[in-house]
Amino acid sequence: MNKIIIDGESLKIDDIVKVARYGYEVELSINAKDKIEKARRLVDRFVENERVEYGITTGFGKFSDVVISREDAKKLQRNLILSHACGVGEEFETEIVRAIMLLRANALSKGYSGARVLTVQTLIDMLNKGVHPVIYQKGSLGASGDLAPLSHMVLTMIGEGEAYYKGERLPSKVAMEKAGINIIELEEKEGLALINGTQVMTAVGALTLYDAINLSKAADIVSSMTVEGLKGITDAYYHRVHDVRPQVGQIKCAKNLLSILEGSTLTTKQGEIRVQDAYTLRCIPQIHGASKDAIEYVRKVVEIEINSATDNPLIFEDEDRVISGGNFHGQPMALAMDFLGIALSELANVSERRIERLVNYQLNDLPPFLTEKGGLNSGFMIAQYTAAALVSENKVLAHPASVDSIPSSANQEDHVSMGTIAARKARNILYNASKVLGIEYLASSQALYFRGNVKLGKGTEKAYNLIRKYIEPLVDDRVMYVDINTASELITNGKLVEEVEKAVGEIL
Image (tube, one colour):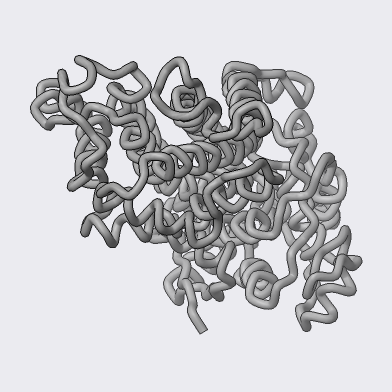
């Protein structure tokens, strides 16, 4: 069985995908167990000595000044979960739930949280045996961490709430029994350790980022097909143009376009048909490249966050200290997710404009709306409407969540990040962008069909042949949403990128 070993230090984005989507098992490293046990011993000692420490022997938030007796310390942790499980809205899909569980277990394995090994192992057992808590999407302010959604995760651990097991939605206690996992009684600090972190926004963000990297590559491929379909000018992609403005993403995109289009007899040089192309063709490297740079920035933030201790207080057993800080604050992720949403929105925005250039007979020498029997047939007319609707929706979604803050907990928590909203918005934008690029993939393929039996670029030829395995050229009108979904799926499942990377012999 494929397995990912976690230690709080070395988890990769690819590892998250393997566990979340492909069911890889998870194992706690020996070193992580040792770190967890050391921190736990310090918590136990503080409880034994009735030392006043936030979240261990005190209430939470504005109740931090309320000292909790030793007799009530365990009840405090249970009450925390029950009272904080206030999520609403749609449920997170299974892959997000699995990513949340993995990331929380990984954060606890760093040994700064004070949870027991037993508690961390329970979370891992749930992952490995397929017990997936029902977690609702809405209710997190992104500081103090993702309290509400993470509380729904913990409900299942203590036998409350609901969970899925083998595709069936069950009371958590029943799901845990069927899976052979014992429910637990939370001890001092453990409830807070489990919910006071950024793992929901980071789980949504990490999977969205992974898909965004693929979508960025697909955008280069699909736009190359449009360049061919419109007999675009490749001089604008010449390396020296980009070397004198050495933006990394821009240089990479220009290189990709030339590699994908290499050998094409449809592309032109400046002056052969026209002196220059419209911006949506000529400036692809500048537009796509800026999104690539944004995605790269987000990648760096996410890679740090997935191996960070983000709860409060933190246990520093080597110094015999418990320190109340603010690592639960999701601002780093909030800004990054807003940036990711904007970057993805722009990939869709320029794609829709290229679709318009493909379907508008006033801007090209192709049949109007890419259909030979215009009037009787509407061709790609409404496909462009759909793309326009999606990019318009994205413009609303791309408004930053991180610029908002509403004080909570009687103004004790007087600035919050809204990072989870930012991550969820970025994921919605990703979905819309993938559909827009799917429509461009369809439209550019139709344009190439009208160009006849010509030599395509070594990358675009593979892309064209791939779509033709699933979708015939449009001769007479047919139900279009099926084609749109199929084309989009070839993008999102990575097949398009995989085929073209093989053809050009390099990673795009």
